[in-house]
Amino acid sequence: MKNKLLKMVAVAMVACVGFSIASCGKKEKGLTINEGKLIMATNAAFAPYEYYDGDTIVGIDAEIAAEVASRLNLELEIQDVAFDSIIAGVQSGKYDIGCAGMTITDERLQSVNFTTPYATGIQSIIVKEGSEITDIDTLIDGDYIVGVQQGTTGDLYMSDDIGDDRIDRYNNGADAILALNNGNVDAVVIDNQPALALVEANEGLIILETPYTEEEYAMAVNKDNTELLNEINRVLAEMESDGTIDAIIEKYIPSEG
Ligand code: ARG
Image 1: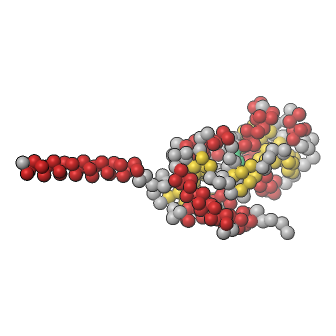
Image 2 (image 1 turned 45 degrees about the vertical axis):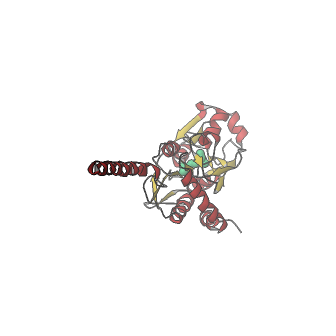
Image 3 (image 1 turned 180 degrees about the vertical axis):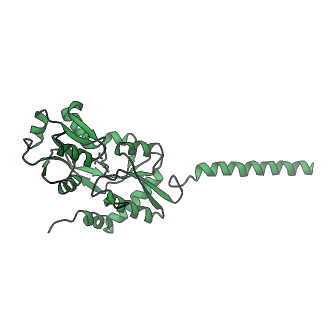
């Protein structure tokens, strides 16, 4: 009798331990995919937000994310992937965050959450000096071909305005610029800061403005991971008020005067 009871207690205890280990794995699932690490997906051909300095990815996003990671006691790991694969990768749990000068859009909000914005951008038109294209209307009204980076807001807006047939989609802005230089496209539509960097690096190109309004850049986070979203928002607010974000942006985009 005594023995039997003991046995039952033992069985119950084993079951309990087993159960708590199982629920442990589930419930105490860490803040990030790999404990201690913050895996960031970006597309590192988007200066000054993310680009290569030798083998290292640097830029505003890289530095802001590194600081966020450090304040959360996480080690940042940056993965350079195709821009239009970032949202899907965050959604499927491949990456903790997408941080790529990424504009908050209603469509993307269906798939991921966005942190509070930390920067802004505006779409620009790049053309060759002396081009007949002088503004968005001449661009839209002619039969011009426009180069964009696949899956970006420039791609979305231009597709809406001129239709698929007149859009050539490239893996990154630099490839679109190459096509512009080669005469394969007549204009490139891309965010203003990368546009400046591209025009600086390529002679004979100029920037026109578009009427598209200002966009807000934020980090994409998996919809199920509101804990990480909240933690990132908490440190972003800290970094906003202690001047860290301004300092990082100023380092890459020095304000004049
Ligand atoms: N802001 C634009 C968008 O969200 C372009 C971002 C491209 N970023 C990049 N790292 N290539 O669609």
